[in-house]
Amino acid sequence: DRRIRIAPSILAADFARLGEECRAAEAAGGDWIHVDVMDGHFVPNITMGPAIVKAIRPHIAGVMDVHLMIAPADPYLGAFAEAGADVLTVHAEAGPHLHRSLQAIRGLGVKAGVALNPATPAEAVEPVLDMIDLVCVMTVNPGFGGQGFIESCLPKIARLRELVEGREIHIEVDGGVTPETAGNCAAMGADVLVAGSAVFSAGAEGYAARIAAIRAAA
Ligand code: DX5
Ligand code: ZN
Image 1 (cartoon, rainbow, N blue to C red):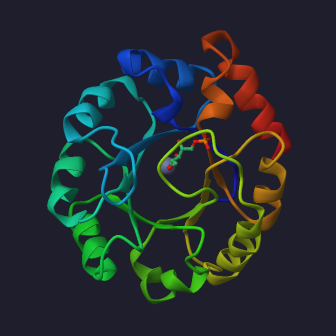
Image 2 (image 1 turned 90 degrees about the vertical axis):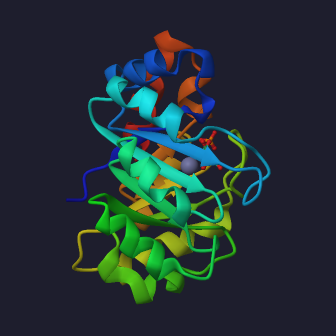
Image 3 (image 1 turned 135 degrees about the horizontal axis):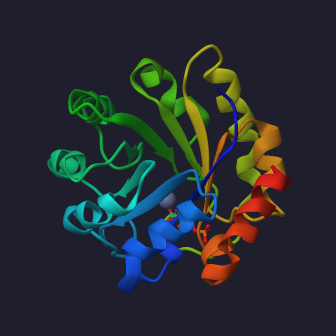
């Protein structure tokens, strides 16, 4: 179904209180919790590994959406599945064996996603459409929260919506999603909107209003 999901990204949350932040984001109306894993190699920042992902799992009632910005990804897929990921997304640019990574994720009984950097075309997922549950369109260069939305990525969302026609594949947008940019994303066919700073910069009392504003704009 094409109903809009808002996925607060805990990259912008208070890392000293991650469990509490996940619970607050869900209580405020967040549909999925988006977890950004960075390795200081594929992207120029380091966040968390499987141990922390496992520690927050009990604090998330719904879908834990794990975005792996790591290369290589394959040696760690088992650990992230074991940590309780519902969706594991690997980057198309992270290695030469995307097909193998997706096979491994599905083999672990987890939903499989492919993320596309801003310079990677929609067609990169065409050969693996029958192996994926989600495509993540990066609308910033991955590595940091709080960056500006790259408008030139919008047509790629529409192209992907055509490519996934007739299949149960989510189209997620990640980076710079705000009440100002969410409308265009949804109009192009996105159904999962990741939002980090737009939600968590509000302070806990403000999360619900921020999530509602993004949903209303979409
Ligand atoms: C960026 C991450 C995003 C990030 C988005 O590399 O993949 O998930 O949290 O943050 P905002 O919403 O602040 O652009
Ligand atoms: Zn992300």
